Length: 122
Image 1 (cartoon, helix red, strand yellow):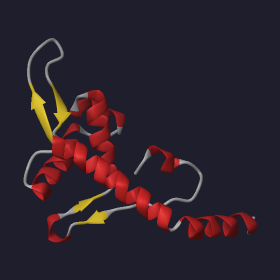
Image 2 (cartoon, helix red, strand yellow):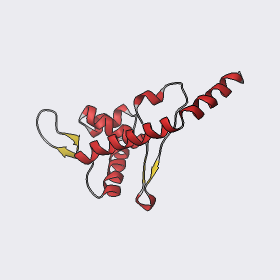
Image 3 (cartoon, one colour):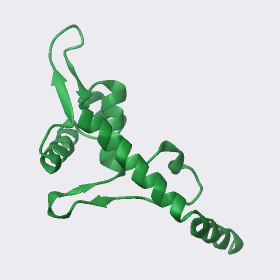
Image 4 (cartoon, helix red, strand yellow):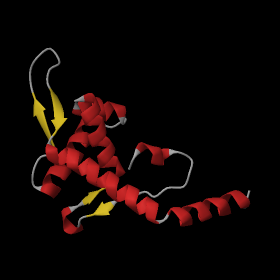
C-alpha cells in the first residue's frame, strides 16, 4: 500500500489471496520496497526489524507463488554483494499499489463516514 496510507486517517489494509498459491499483502510489498531501497536483503530485514531468514522465507514464498524470482542477488565487490528487484518484483509493487489505490478510492466516502462516527463518539 502506498506510504500515505499509514497516517491517522482511515484506510484499507489490502491482502490479496491468490488461492492455493498464497497471499500478497503490505508486509511482503514493504519488504520488496526496502530491498529496492537498500539493494540488500539483510538491509531490508534490519529496516523491518526482521531476521534475515524470515526475509528470505518471504522472498522465497513470492518466488514460489509466481514461479519466477522477484529479485536477483549478486556477489562480490567491497559491498559483499546485494540484491535488486527483477521486472516481476517491480511489477508486483506497481500492481499492488494500483489495486490498493483503486480499492481505497472506491470506498472513500464510506471510510470518511466511519471516521466521522469514530470522532463523534469521543
